[in-house]
Amino acid sequence: MKGIEVGILGATGMVGQQFIALLANHPWFTVTWLGASQRSEGKAYRDAAAWRLPARPPDHVSKLIVEQASPGRAPKLVFSGLDASVAGDIERAFAEAGHVVVSNSRNYRMEPDVPLVIPEVNGDHLALVNTQAAGRGWKGRIVTNPNCSTIVLSMALAPLRQFGLKTVMLTTLQAVSGAGYPGVPSWDILGNVIPFIDGEEEKIQTETKKILGCLTSGRVEPHQVTVSATTTRVAVHDGHTESVSVGFDKSPEPDAIIDAFNSFRGRPQELGLPSAPPQPIVYLADRNRPQPALDVNRDGGMTVSVGRLRPCPVLDYKFIALGHNTIRGAAGAAILNAELMEREGLL
Ligand code: NAP
Image (cartoon, rainbow, N blue to C red; front, side, top):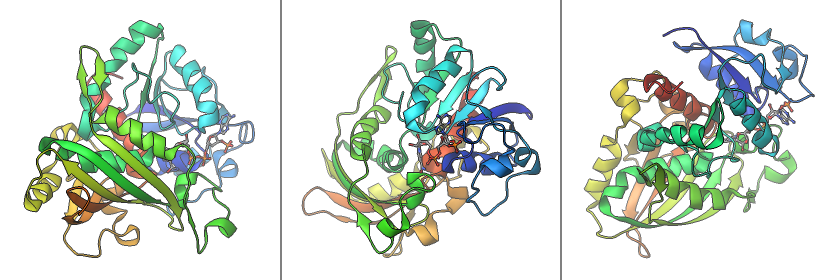
């Protein structure tokens, strides 16, 4: 399995850096190509990226020359952490040229023939790539992972579908790393809460329904749940925290919900994929958890931590969910998607 070459589009950004860090010792994938903007093109990666992560990038990647973000020299499998303002055109050009693009950007997520996948929740939606290839005449494919807040929410909701999930209201407290680098000016974020993140609430409200939906006859039937989201940015490095209230058709006992969180498993755990956490959702019983400072890196940042389940006087229950936005919410999510695609023969 070793030695599948991969490229990274947007390699210099927050998500691009996380790809490089997570792939440093990956058993199947080796980074051999990097692409970014004209600002970085032609420079060695170590000079082009404002590296923000604790572990240094591997030597062979530091020395790679960042190339123009256009198809030609990149390997077949390309991860994308491109800015959404340019991802639409660039990712399409790569797919047309025969690349398999596994993307973090919002541009293609809601297209009916593009899989929007969390492998534990709806790995079966990857089958949409066949419709995509036939319909668009592309030699390659685009597969997407959801918005970072949506991933945390959808993972926490997936085990609750069995109780007739009807209504969800949430408020997010989102980390600064979610805004890329350099992101929000320190003057704006320190000692402050910003009650607006452009486009984020709409993404959570629409993407969640597609992810929790069912694939039937080559299309996704969205889940009937109604989602209302308020999003805020707070002065936290990494980790999106979400305060979630849920309403059900038939309200279960609290122990049934906790058991549903803790026993939730998916195809990645079944297959033992390299980036799969052993337990995708962990319920923390301490009344002051989860906290980003203590819980965000659980199992390499791939686990969603949940806590504080209690009755909600408006809906049925409320709880707190937390996930690492650039790992489970971005680069780690895309790598897990590619691992599942490899195992399912879709690469
Ligand atoms: P970022 O730090 O701003 O990085 C953006 C990347 O895009 C950089 O590598 C940049 O290259 C490249 N780029 C910009 N303009 C380009 C152009 N014209 N041609 C080629 N490359 C270009 O952003 P980020 O936080 O990593 O986010 C990347 C994507 O992932 C976005 O679509 C974002 O919405 C999504 N996402 C982010 C998170 C998160 O938590 N941060 C989570 C989920 C999804 P240069 O350095 O050369 O300018």
